[in-house]
Figure 1 (tube, rainbow, N blue to C red):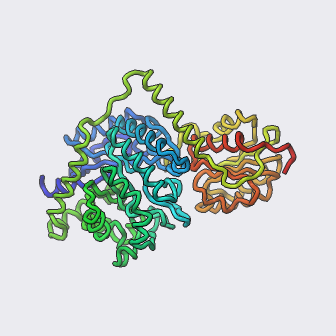
Figure 2: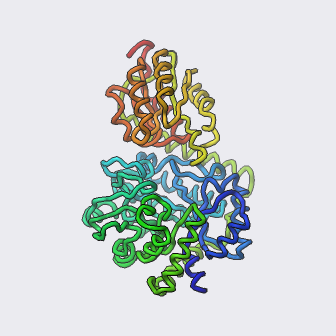
Figure 3: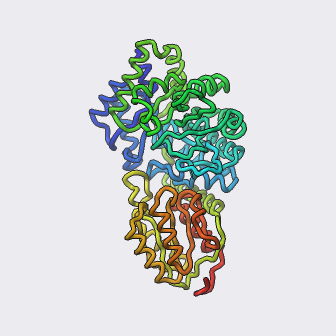
Length: 517
């Protein structure tokens, strides 16, 4: 292999659109990129996605390492061909590792049929008492042993089905109070605390022979004393500790170098050099073709000038080739018969419903809702996010979706939809609607991040005669809910989460008499 081919084989790039264009082919040929990461913007249907992968590999006449960021819950890339599982926190809440194992089996089968080699999951971050704007429901929970058991069960099952798992975000992103997609967090944990809490799930993943690990972008000043050196750039954390001290032999991925946490530190070409110097095998630049070219050029210059060691480059390429060699075929076969496919889908839906039923939680007790009372439902227009994240088809028309979901409980409510970034006019209209009925169901979407949602909650709590709140994203919003107000969650905003939360509210909480406060 030429130096250009060695360097390129370590790069994971994302592409625009749903079809392979001459520009994309030229880009992969000129950068020799060996990895492809697929996102929502690349997906129209399972057949289309398989064609996209095949077309690009055929044009390049070489095999790519195809990756996806498919965690479940909040982070799901494909609208069809995969099961929409609840969040990791929902599964962690059940305490049942068999749910994690069965999820791993199902997603492994589905992702291999789509041609995915590596899934950037599970999240093994351990939550703390601090507010977590980025991880939250993406993590299994606050107990390191629970996170370790859940993660290991999912990893083992996924890899048996042919998909390489990628445990993230080493050495632990749970304490971060800033989102590294946007800003550079600082995490003040010591080596002792790391060993006692945050490394336990990663050690278990290594014992489970996880194929790859992804690092994180924050500053860890107690671990890496050089100022402005995030874990991504830290040779002490990545090479000396993760590679040498733990003896980990799998592939080490960086997180996306286009994130705000990295771009505020240095140009992306220099970021790529420091990422390689730290000890990563695979380097991600997931969105911008110009940035990706700068990554390749920065690394090429660094190896030519001997700033980076060729020996370590060759060792990284060997680990990448080992990761690639774990699969012989590009696509796992589809179910043999339509009847088998239908049976598998029914089993997956039953598993999702079982997880939801066991996960749904009353965070704060209070009076429930009466099916005989006039009802206002206030909910966010999650379809507004459809241009940025995968929104399930059923939820693209929220009004119809909610009417259908509430009908089995005897409700025919008045529905008021508001933007997630709620305007003052929408808040006033929602408060007026709540004041005009006997009870209100509010579906709240992250009042910690969206000030309008917090203001909406405050207004509805003042206006409504009786209110029940369902949290659709992270549970931190419970602190804004008044005492004696029923507040429940199923740890997410997917269809399965809403179904589980509604069942919790209507089937497990006694209905008050009409007019009872």
